[in-house]
Image (cartoon, rainbow, N blue to C red; front, side, top):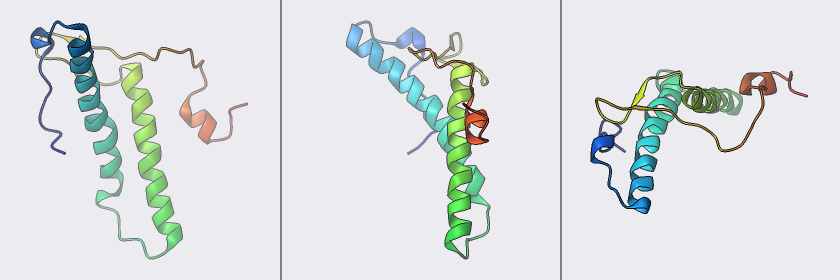
Amino acid sequence: MNTSDTPRPYAEWRTASFDRAEDAAYTFGHHLMQHCRDEALKAVEFAAIPTSAEEFRAQVNTAVDTALHNVVDLLEGFWPTQAGPNHRVAYALSVCIGDIGYWKWKDGEFR
């Protein structure tokens, strides 16, 4: 996938309800790939080739943790996300998840 391609800017989003939702989804998908997938791959891109199953699992865990952490960052607005030059995008979950955080859960601090 070429993540350098950008979705259409907000000013060019289609007006039909389904089409507009699809344009929004393309924008979200672009940001998800850019900030979550690509950053997770960087975590293992320059790592040494694993010599054991344990090393491989550790590298995969690092990449997955990075991706999941960055999903939360994306939802929290950590990165300035745009839908064209004049429109900022903000993402939100449609459920209340509380103030627990991924790292508290991963580190065993979640109850």
